[in-house]
Length: 418
Image (tube, rainbow, N blue to C red; front, side):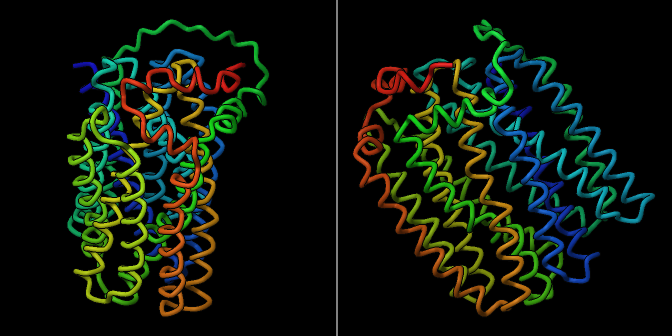
């Protein structure tokens, strides 16, 4: 029951952030005179704040009381949403205030995101960890579908101000529920380590673990391409090419999320004591690339939706297989910090990609950007070879769940020395 409460509370928090993202994007798109650079800069700023918070979030979750960390994060989310609503109501859509609110919510979202996989082993039995990670991914993809539909639908029907009120409500409920979840773990860390050492601890662990580093490389390339596609290219495609509204944007976003949902349902049913992880990791990565290529080549909106669904399916298929490894193989004392370092490495590509593709849209136009996405899709497919060519990564991806328990501690003991 504690696991379900935790996942639902986290899902509400992530759902609120998803609806907020759509509201933010639509606010900037409709008030910036169709200037894609403004949206690209806004997204970049959000993820820069996310970057700064990720390593420290992992350190806080490993080192301090997990209940306090999650509750403080919840309070900040509620506060930032109130500030954003006041801006809409009284300050006439100030980009500075929007940036401030979005940055705070991006930072708190990083705490929630990195906490899920790192805290599941504290409240789930070892034999159920893969299913728990799959359940978390299922709930996450489901909230993404609901978030896209609610965000686009409420903006169209009720307007931005009432949509932001819903975001405030969801954050508040999530915060309230966190007070009924208690992570009773022994704190084995002494808080005498210098700040810079704590900031880099997760990266040190990531550096020593060859398999995690290889998987992280493929995720970084995917994030550089896929996130700008969803957050910068598609909104302007809807506005300028389809002349559509928030409902159309919601349909495209929901297609991607629906693919994630399908992938999560299927992977949750797979027993990795019988089947090897290498197949969903490689196959999922290929599907991500094929979906991006399809989006760049196919013009009918239904085919673009299908392409996004394909990429979403591949993303979750690969993600569950990789995340369940860390839940089993990494010791409790370093799991959140490693998650934070991996999130940081992936997220650092998002502001770069957002700025790059925002600039490309302004400079070259849609026709050339489609050609670039086609090449990027091919690049993602090529990265599918990395786990196969790396002997240590291939070894880990072929291990059963029963063989992964604390496996990194024996394979890479120097990675977990503070």
